[in-house]
Image (tube, rainbow, N blue to C red; front, side, top):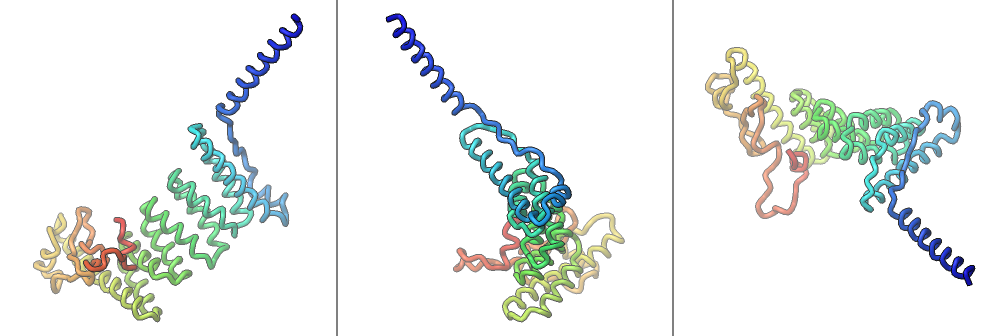
Length: 297
């Protein structure tokens, strides 16, 4: 009798402990680790002809790790991501196989918006451009990063110029000309658009390029007049009309896009149109191609 009671009590204790362990295992924060990645040069030497597969495995490893983190976050288990190891793993994947597009996609999405490491991402993209010479995605990504995250419009213009040449997309050409203007290299933007006008065969796109070209030519004229003004004055003029009154402009310049030119607080020539055609009232739901580059100032 005593033995039966003891066994029954032991079973109850085991059940209680087991239930406690199950609950604890379900709720405890499981450590998700990516770990150290050996140098790409070492892996390339060891992998030999299997380096492409190893590159893909590296990306899958990062994706699996990142996905595991997301699952933990959804369950309110906050684990700090190993961003450095993630980046080094993706970098290794790229150096093992510079044609691995998955690596570039992940770097572009994970290390720009979330981590703010656009400069490092562009270093990867620059490496890839040496090999993926016909791919417009990489210079497009790099151009966006340079303009949006780094505010380096000079570099952004060069990337977008390459993306435009590779893709034939007129949007990239317009972005390139705009970034040339933003970087204070209006004349280079003019030269670039002149070439685009000459080689474009589509009449509609040729007109769009010509419109942007005309706007930059007028902008350059005002910039030259402003430069002359600054040689004789200690401050910028109040408005464009002062340049005309001083005889530095033959007439008050007109914006081909329908806006009005002005000089902003930083002394840069701008226009109220932002180099975009006004949207027709009866077509407010349709955005023209020419409006897209200036959609977000």
